[in-house]
Image (cartoon, rainbow, N blue to C red; front, side, top):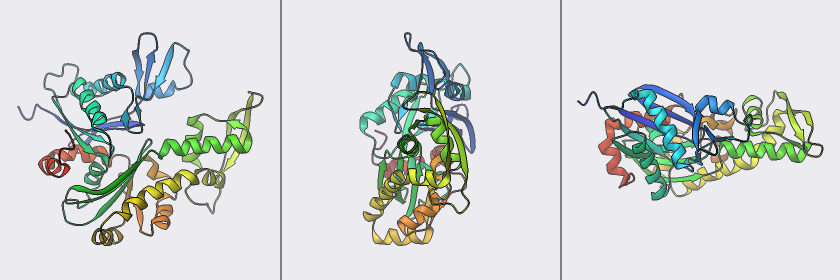
Length: 337
């Protein structure tokens, strides 16, 4: 019977949702759905719905059901999660799976309950919650079950979370809503103010990924984009450079660094010494930004590095968490309650 009851690790993110079992990632989909507005009927989800963004008639709306890592649209989240779970388990759900689901550090009891209820509504027989930084640390294979300091900065789309972990528990941590999407917003604002052009979020994200960097680049890249002139409303091209994107991103990057500094300031000196020796582990999609590890190394005065599996370590850690579940629950002091 135990073999028939599946144990799924789930990373329910603002931008992407992943499901893993054991050492295998089974599902990766953008956290987005398309609905018929009048009926609240879900017609598409994931990659297909993402491709519909900005390209649908008034009768259809494309929605991100999570904002800043927490559920904003409960019914849509439940439907979306139900579809993904059934892709893994099959349509019948005869043996209901057990879920270990990540949530951002510092979420309220109401927000935790919403995640648990969505999981149960999607077919789980039990939903256990784990803070995202702890799941990420497990997925990175950090020695978190020892009395030594390990620092993780999880840089997602909706939240940035910095945490110091020791003895399988979070010693000090902070979360900020300044993350990948805020960086995109900063680029949009910069282009509008400097060139009088309105660009869509996907264009800002493309600029960030293709030519963006956290620090000024020796080899400067350029990219031509199409925007909308905010005076005439007509299409207008503009070419942007790497160093312009660097300039645009500085305010949110400074806030990300400030979040990490606040965590270090309230961490015991003994653990700080360990972190200096081990370095600060960076994960999440935003961690892939060119030069961000060097930027944070300079800002924090501690070596920062991007882990080998930055995009998948959190869901991998959630799946592996079942093997040390008793230890996790003991150190979380009712976190899942």
